[in-house]
Every structure is written in C-alpha cells, then in structure tokens.
Length: 107
Picture 1 (tube, rainbow, N blue to C red):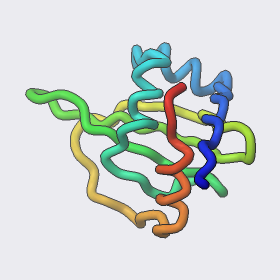
Picture 2: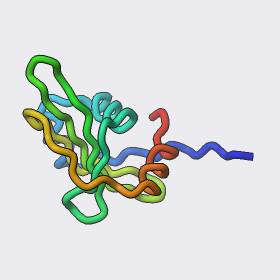
Picture 3: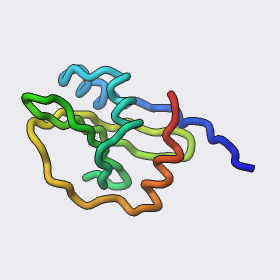
C-alpha cells in the first residue's frame, strides 16, 4: 500500500519576499514554478536547488527560484527574473529529481 505524503510547508525568507516585490512576482507564481519546472539544477549556495520556468513570448525571460529542502519544509531562499535564455548547467542527480517530483503536491 502506497502512502500519500503530506505536502511540505513553504518557508519564505525576507530576501525572497523582497526579490518577489522587486520583480513583481506573486506567491502563486512561485508555487507554479515549483510545481511545473522546466529545468532543475544545482544551486550556487551549498545544499540548494535552482528551479527555472520560461516566461514571455516576445521578450523571453526565465523565472528562477532557489530552494533548500528539509524534512518538513521547503525554504524559498530567493526568486529572480533573468532577461534572455541561459544554457543548461549541471543537472541534479536522478535520485533527487525523483524525490522532488514525489514531494511536489498541491499547496
């Protein structure tokens, strides 16, 4: 029998809230990026994950969210809008991607 895991609670840092205000990103938009990422990479900071979703048709941008996973919560460290397209960097190992996909749920 498969047990359904509880979705992890989101913890928003003050830095992330400030960046969301600066780039005019809502909480719902950040949750959407977490639920439907186009690309998942290793973050620059230790033990972090960077998640990206493309945005815009005419002027193409990328929306990025940096998170840190814990047992009971998911910490949103930062969020930003990148003008243009980036080349894919170093991807995460398959084990972590599977764990993220099973842990993602409705908030």
